[in-house]
Length: 315
Figure 1 (cartoon, rainbow, N blue to C red):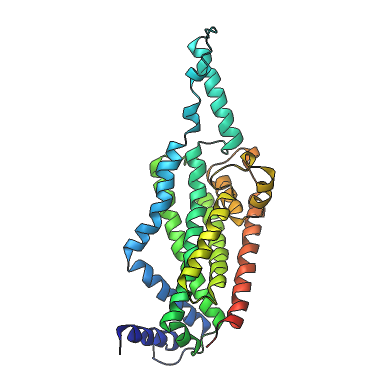
Figure 2 (tube, rainbow, N blue to C red):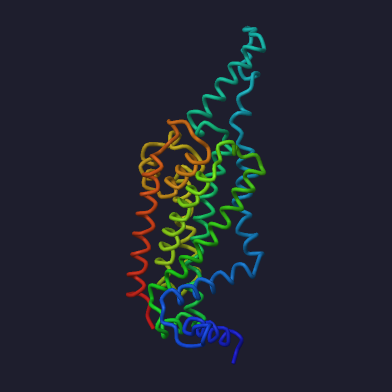
């Protein structure tokens, strides 16, 4: 018997047997935990995967966030008009007023790096959830999915186990990105325990919805290349069609319509309100509305994913 087959048989037993007495356990929570733990083992037992998943948002923060310095473009020398000899104190006041005006009107009343850092939290959620669907493809190819489908474990439980594993991974990585952002200079003067908790509740709902969406897209896929193509196709519109990188006010009207239905925008807006205390002009919606929108997004796509799992997963 091959190592792969032995692993599959061992994991199948974990789904069926109660570890306390070795008897058959038909509880849906037991099967869900076994499936969730199986997916998490692939992640925390290979630390290099965690490191690689953090490289891209860290690069965005360290390079793009620091290089795109709006305040650095507004200097007194830019207003030193030939023939108009203004005192240096006046030039400094002009530059300071324009810089503060840009921050208040465009970047939620803070610097661009802090503005971007909150957007990167939503980005890490999106990128992690996108790859949650790949596990379905590999389980189908290696035969584990057929083994699970032959057990009493409900098909909806299979989907929920994979969704929860994706949520745990994405939230852990988002926490690391937030810590790194603070170390790199993010403004944390408005951080409160309740604000951080509310932000991660929003990220939880965002991750839940996106994990369900990408798992739903992978239910009938047998080729990882197809799943990769779908992920790459959706990544750019979802990321750039949100307020994660740039303020909505700087976008054309046709793009603003898409931004206002993109769930990433609501998770980012929620995080900025709770972590940065933005100016009123930079707020998309109220905190309760952002949470309700994200909750509806998570519930709807999770329900669709569970329903489709009964129809599309075949023995």
